[in-house]
Length: 332
Image 1 (cartoon, rainbow, N blue to C red):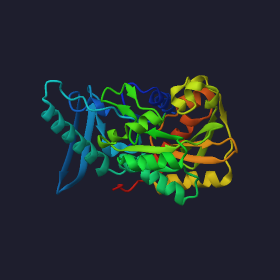
Image 2: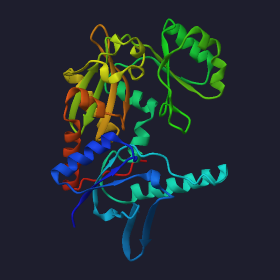
Image 3: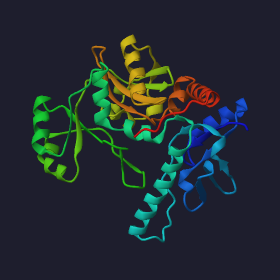
């Protein structure tokens, strides 16, 4: 039986498309699965019994995936389930949770090498946990506050001389349409005057760190690919580089100080990740300040503008994990 690599993503994913081309060129057997086809266009079956080990089949449009042939999984960026528009709001909520339950059961019931296991991703996305581990590992971090208390926000404002920013704690997208991004924004006096809105939802507020450049560190296995993004030359990108014309900004591959390299790898290990994108700031004094780690961060554009071999390195990792039959314990 030939062991296969599974790519779990959405239908329109240009970075996953690049991995497909890479694996095809190498002659490596793989399958691609879109959870967004569940439940209307994809069939998923998990079988359990006293006389046989767990068995699972999944697929869509005539394609069937036998889970016992999957030895490595790249859990990329799956899109939401395709629930029937004819369902009521209550029925949609029920159907969503039922879909989630069966898919999580699939991910958790079968051994494979994961980049990254969705349970690991869920835990690693916790911003408070990230900052706790980063500080413990020796990273410099900004003063940060998670709160729904207007008085606590006012105190941070005073402590930072009014130089703080608001950031989202989760995916950074407003609404299910995935169209309206929530970027990092400076908190002005007018925002502070309306801090009672925190009663609707808590916020993440952070001391604004002076930047010479942004730093995106792509971590693949035990390899680091640090790139400075010269965001400060674009007025729209100075607070959040994603607001600017990112492909047109200067991207420069750099070498990190050894303690920062060591801490980045240690952070990945602490979170049980084989891949991550770490965002830091390089200050005008040359200091490195940790902001966050994204266990599913984008990287396709970095390879495009720098020529760094990110897809090939990730393919190497998946193939090595497949061949060694590494497995990851369930995160919980």
